[in-house]
Amino acid sequence: MLSHKFTIIEFFYLIVLIIMLNIIEAYAEIGGSNVDEGKIYEYKWANIQKVLSRIGYQDFFDHEMSRYGAFDTISRNADGSSINIINRTNNRALVMDCNGTVKHFKLLNSNSWFDHNNNILMWPDASGQNKNKCLKGDGPASFDAIDPSGQYFISWFDNKYYAITSINHPDTPLAKVDVISNQFLYIFTKRNQIYVFGHTERSVSTPLKAFIYERKGSKVELIEKIEIPRAQKHGSPYVVEDLSPWSDEILLRDMRPFPSLSKFYIYNLTSKELKYYGLATKDRGLFLKCDILEKVQEKYREP
Image 1 (cartoon, one colour):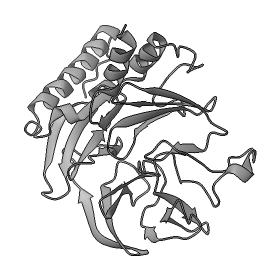
Image 2 (cartoon, rainbow, N blue to C red):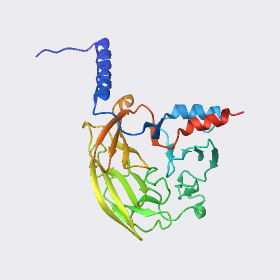
Image 3 (cartoon, rainbow, N blue to C red):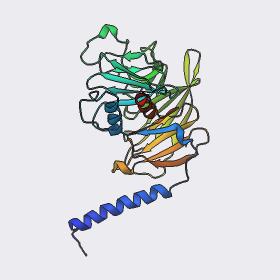
Image 4 (cartoon, one colour):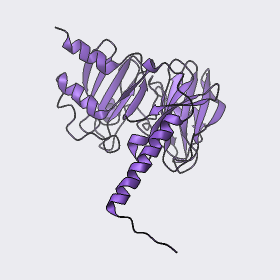
C-alpha cells in the first residue's frame, strides 16, 4: 500500500483548495435570492465596536468581542425598526432605531431583555439580587428564547419539558414545545401566530424543525410542524438567524468548520422553497426596516 506524508507546503495548499472549493460551491448553489436585499442587514461585532467608538460609546464593551466567546447579544424589535445590543458582562444595553436615536440603559442583571417598546424585561439571575424588581417565574430557556415583541418566551417546566409561556403569566405553560435542547432555540410572534424553531434530536446538525402555533383566545394550539430542508448535509449546526416581520421567509445560517465559509439561505414557510442567499461572513443577519448602524452614524455626522 502506498503511503505519503504531507509536507507543510502540501498541507497548506490542501487547505487553500478546500476553501476555494467551498467558495465555488457557494456561488454555484441553488439560484439567487428573491428577497429584497434591502430588508436584510448583516453586521460584524468588530464593525459595531467601531461605530460605538465613533459615537462616544468606546467603553461600552470592556472585553474582546467574539460571536462564540461572549454572552453579548444583538436583536431587533417586532417590526425591525430598532435593534438592541446587550453587554451581559457589565449589564449595559444600547437601543438604536431608524431615526438614528441611541439610548443607553444600565441593567440590574444579566437576565434582561427588551420588549417591542424598549421596556426592560428582567428575571432573577444566579445572584438573586433585585429579585423584587424581577418578573415572576423562571426566565427564558436561552437568550434567544424570547420573541422580539416581548410577549412570549420558552421556559423549562417541572424539570420535564419546554413550553411557550407569556410575560404576563410566566408560570402558566400555554403549549408544549417538542424540542430536546435549549441550544439554538428561537421564538417569534407575528399576527396571530407563534413560531418556534429548534431541534428534536441532541445534535444541532440534525434536521431543523419549525413549529407554528395559533393563538385562539387564551389558548395556543399547534397548527403545523415543518422539517426545514438543508442544501447539503454535514456535521455543523444549521440554525435560524431571523424570521421576517413582513413575509413568511426565514433567514438560515448553515455553519461550516471555517466560519468564513458559512452560508445564508432563505426558506419560505408557505411555498417550502429553499434558496441560497450568500456567504454568511458577518456575525449577525437581521430583517430590518433600514441600516440602523448607518442611520446612527448619519445622525452623529450632522452639524
